[in-house]
Image 1 (cartoon, helix red, strand yellow):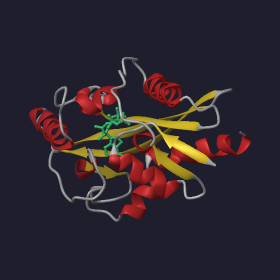
Image 2 (tube, rainbow, N blue to C red):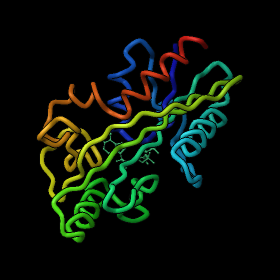
Image 3 (spheres, rainbow, N blue to C red):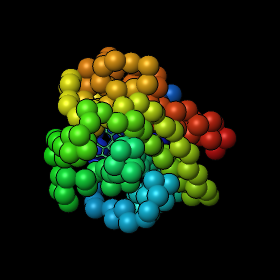
Length: 195
Ligand code: ITT
Protein backbone atom coordinates (compact mmCIF):
# COMPACT_ATOMS: atom_id res chain seq x y z
CA UNK A 1 0.00 0.00 0.00
CA UNK A 2 1.34 3.44 -0.98
CA UNK A 3 1.32 6.01 1.83
CA UNK A 4 2.08 9.61 0.94
CA UNK A 5 3.50 11.66 3.83
CA UNK A 6 2.28 15.24 4.06
CA UNK A 7 5.38 16.57 5.80
CA UNK A 8 8.57 18.35 4.93
CA UNK A 9 10.17 17.53 8.29
CA UNK A 10 12.96 15.04 7.61
CA UNK A 11 13.03 13.84 11.23
CA UNK A 12 9.37 12.84 11.01
CA UNK A 13 9.90 11.14 7.63
CA UNK A 14 12.74 9.03 9.04
CA UNK A 15 10.74 7.96 12.09
CA UNK A 16 7.52 7.23 10.16
CA UNK A 17 9.40 5.19 7.55
CA UNK A 18 11.11 3.18 10.33
CA UNK A 19 7.74 2.51 11.97
CA UNK A 20 5.77 1.68 8.80
CA UNK A 21 7.94 -0.96 7.19
CA UNK A 22 4.93 -2.75 5.68
CA UNK A 23 4.06 0.24 3.51
CA UNK A 24 5.68 2.12 0.68
CA UNK A 25 6.08 5.47 2.45
CA UNK A 26 6.72 8.42 0.11
CA UNK A 27 7.28 12.01 1.25
CA UNK A 28 4.99 14.20 -0.85
CA UNK A 29 7.98 16.29 -1.95
CA UNK A 30 9.05 13.34 -4.09
CA UNK A 31 5.77 13.54 -6.04
CA UNK A 32 5.08 17.26 -6.30
CA UNK A 33 6.96 20.38 -5.33
CA UNK A 34 6.60 21.15 -1.62
CA UNK A 35 4.33 24.09 -0.89
CA UNK A 36 3.41 26.15 2.15
CA UNK A 37 0.44 24.83 4.10
CA UNK A 38 -1.16 27.28 6.52
CA UNK A 39 -1.75 25.45 9.80
CA UNK A 40 -4.19 27.90 11.36
CA UNK A 41 -6.40 25.62 13.45
CA UNK A 42 -6.17 25.53 17.23
CA UNK A 43 -5.76 21.79 17.77
CA UNK A 44 -3.17 19.20 16.70
CA UNK A 45 -6.03 17.20 15.18
CA UNK A 46 -7.34 19.97 12.92
CA UNK A 47 -3.84 21.00 11.84
CA UNK A 48 -2.99 17.38 10.92
CA UNK A 49 -6.20 17.17 8.87
CA UNK A 50 -5.43 20.50 7.15
CA UNK A 51 -2.03 19.16 6.03
CA UNK A 52 -3.35 15.78 4.88
CA UNK A 53 -6.24 17.34 2.92
CA UNK A 54 -3.98 19.96 1.29
CA UNK A 55 -1.57 17.30 0.01
CA UNK A 56 -4.36 14.94 -1.06
CA UNK A 57 -5.99 17.71 -3.12
CA UNK A 58 -2.68 18.90 -4.59
CA UNK A 59 -1.65 15.44 -5.80
CA UNK A 60 -5.03 14.83 -7.38
CA UNK A 61 -4.82 11.02 -7.51
CA UNK A 62 -7.83 9.25 -5.98
CA UNK A 63 -5.88 6.05 -5.32
CA UNK A 64 -3.49 7.47 -2.72
CA UNK A 65 -3.68 7.56 1.06
CA UNK A 66 -2.17 10.66 2.64
CA UNK A 67 -0.78 10.64 6.18
CA UNK A 68 0.02 13.85 8.07
CA UNK A 69 1.58 14.32 11.51
CA UNK A 70 0.99 17.40 13.62
CA UNK A 71 2.95 17.30 16.83
CA UNK A 72 4.55 19.33 19.57
CA UNK A 73 5.79 19.55 23.13
CA UNK A 74 3.79 20.96 26.08
CA UNK A 75 5.65 22.05 29.22
CA UNK A 76 3.71 22.14 32.49
CA UNK A 77 5.57 25.06 34.10
CA UNK A 78 4.86 27.11 30.94
CA UNK A 79 1.12 26.31 31.11
CA UNK A 80 1.38 23.90 28.19
CA UNK A 81 3.47 26.09 25.86
CA UNK A 82 4.63 25.79 23.17
CA UNK A 83 2.02 23.08 22.30
CA UNK A 84 0.60 23.56 18.80
CA UNK A 85 3.08 26.43 18.31
CA UNK A 86 6.14 24.18 18.77
CA UNK A 87 7.42 24.61 15.20
CA UNK A 88 7.20 28.42 15.41
CA UNK A 89 8.21 28.93 19.07
CA UNK A 90 11.48 30.68 18.19
CA UNK A 91 9.89 32.83 15.46
CA UNK A 92 8.34 32.42 12.02
CA UNK A 93 11.38 30.83 10.34
CA UNK A 94 12.94 29.41 13.48
CA UNK A 95 15.29 26.44 13.17
CA UNK A 96 15.09 23.42 15.47
CA UNK A 97 18.06 24.90 17.35
CA UNK A 98 16.34 28.31 17.80
CA UNK A 99 13.24 26.58 19.18
CA UNK A 100 15.27 24.36 21.50
CA UNK A 101 17.27 27.30 22.89
CA UNK A 102 14.16 29.41 23.44
CA UNK A 103 12.39 26.62 25.32
CA UNK A 104 15.39 25.88 27.55
CA UNK A 105 15.70 29.60 28.33
CA UNK A 106 11.99 29.82 29.19
CA UNK A 107 12.41 26.96 31.69
CA UNK A 108 15.54 28.58 33.18
CA UNK A 109 13.64 31.85 33.57
CA UNK A 110 11.16 30.03 35.81
CA UNK A 111 14.11 29.28 38.12
CA UNK A 112 13.94 25.48 37.69
CA UNK A 113 16.14 22.90 36.00
CA UNK A 114 13.28 20.89 34.56
CA UNK A 115 9.50 20.60 34.35
CA UNK A 116 7.05 17.78 33.67
CA UNK A 117 6.19 17.85 29.96
CA UNK A 118 4.70 15.75 27.21
CA UNK A 119 4.78 15.34 23.49
CA UNK A 120 1.56 14.97 21.46
CA UNK A 121 1.24 13.57 17.94
CA UNK A 122 -1.95 13.73 15.89
CA UNK A 123 -1.81 11.49 12.82
CA UNK A 124 -4.40 12.20 10.12
CA UNK A 125 -5.27 9.87 7.26
CA UNK A 126 -7.11 11.16 4.20
CA UNK A 127 -8.38 9.06 1.29
CA UNK A 128 -10.91 9.79 -1.43
CA UNK A 129 -13.71 8.36 0.73
CA UNK A 130 -12.66 9.05 4.29
CA UNK A 131 -10.79 11.01 6.92
CA UNK A 132 -9.45 9.81 10.28
CA UNK A 133 -7.32 11.20 13.07
CA UNK A 134 -5.65 9.40 15.98
CA UNK A 135 -3.37 10.60 18.78
CA UNK A 136 -0.40 9.43 20.81
CA UNK A 137 1.43 10.96 23.81
CA UNK A 138 4.81 10.56 25.50
CA UNK A 139 5.31 11.87 29.05
CA UNK A 140 8.54 12.90 30.73
CA UNK A 141 10.54 16.00 31.69
CA UNK A 142 11.66 19.01 29.68
CA UNK A 143 15.15 20.08 30.82
CA UNK A 144 16.77 23.54 30.92
CA UNK A 145 19.90 22.07 29.29
CA UNK A 146 20.46 19.89 26.25
CA UNK A 147 22.35 16.67 25.82
CA UNK A 148 22.93 14.37 22.83
CA UNK A 149 22.35 14.74 19.12
CA UNK A 150 19.94 11.92 18.27
CA UNK A 151 16.35 12.45 17.17
CA UNK A 152 15.32 15.96 16.13
CA UNK A 153 13.57 19.08 17.39
CA UNK A 154 13.25 19.17 21.16
CA UNK A 155 14.68 15.66 21.72
CA UNK A 156 18.02 16.84 23.23
CA UNK A 157 16.08 18.45 26.13
CA UNK A 158 13.40 15.76 26.76
CA UNK A 159 13.83 12.86 29.20
CA UNK A 160 11.09 10.22 28.86
CA UNK A 161 9.45 8.89 32.02
CA UNK A 162 11.49 5.99 33.44
CA UNK A 163 14.79 7.13 31.88
CA UNK A 164 17.67 9.32 33.04
CA UNK A 165 18.99 10.55 29.71
CA UNK A 166 17.44 12.73 27.02
CA UNK A 167 16.11 11.34 23.74
CA UNK A 168 19.13 13.04 22.21
CA UNK A 169 21.39 10.72 24.19
CA UNK A 170 19.31 7.51 24.24
CA UNK A 171 19.39 4.91 21.48
CA UNK A 172 16.91 5.59 18.64
CA UNK A 173 15.18 2.27 19.33
CA UNK A 174 14.00 3.56 22.72
CA UNK A 175 12.18 6.52 21.13
CA UNK A 176 10.82 4.20 18.46
CA UNK A 177 9.26 2.01 21.16
CA UNK A 178 7.66 4.69 23.31
CA UNK A 179 7.16 7.86 21.34
CA UNK A 180 3.95 9.84 20.84
CA UNK A 181 4.42 9.21 17.11
CA UNK A 182 4.82 5.44 17.45
CA UNK A 183 1.70 5.21 19.64
CA UNK A 184 -0.40 7.22 17.18
CA UNK A 185 0.98 5.25 14.23
CA UNK A 186 0.08 1.99 15.96
CA UNK A 187 -3.56 3.15 15.91
CA UNK A 188 -3.26 4.53 12.37
CA UNK A 189 -2.06 1.13 11.13
CA UNK A 190 -5.17 -0.52 12.56
CA UNK A 191 -7.27 1.90 10.50
CA UNK A 192 -5.11 1.38 7.41
CA UNK A 193 -5.85 -2.35 7.54
CA UNK A 194 -9.54 -1.61 7.13
CA UNK A 195 -9.12 0.60 4.03
P1 ITT B 1 5.37 19.49 8.88
O1 ITT B 1 4.27 20.46 9.29
O2 ITT B 1 5.84 19.68 7.48
O3 ITT B 1 5.01 18.08 9.20
P2 ITT B 1 6.79 20.70 11.13
O4 ITT B 1 8.16 20.47 11.70
O5 ITT B 1 6.41 22.13 10.85
O6 ITT B 1 6.68 19.82 9.78
P3 ITT B 1 4.69 20.54 13.11
O7 ITT B 1 3.95 21.73 12.61
O8 ITT B 1 3.91 19.33 13.52
O9 ITT B 1 5.73 20.00 12.03
O10 ITT B 1 5.59 21.01 14.31
C1 ITT B 1 6.14 20.09 15.20
C2 ITT B 1 7.16 20.79 16.10
O11 ITT B 1 7.36 19.98 17.26
C3 ITT B 1 8.52 20.92 15.42
O12 ITT B 1 9.21 22.04 15.96
C4 ITT B 1 9.23 19.65 15.83
O13 ITT B 1 10.63 19.80 15.84
C5 ITT B 1 8.65 19.38 17.22
N1 ITT B 1 8.49 17.94 17.41
C6 ITT B 1 7.44 17.17 17.02
N2 ITT B 1 7.69 15.86 17.26
C7 ITT B 1 8.91 15.82 17.79
C8 ITT B 1 9.73 14.78 18.22
O14 ITT B 1 9.36 13.51 18.10
N3 ITT B 1 10.93 15.08 18.71
C9 ITT B 1 11.33 16.35 18.82
N4 ITT B 1 10.64 17.41 18.42
C10 ITT B 1 9.42 17.16 17.91
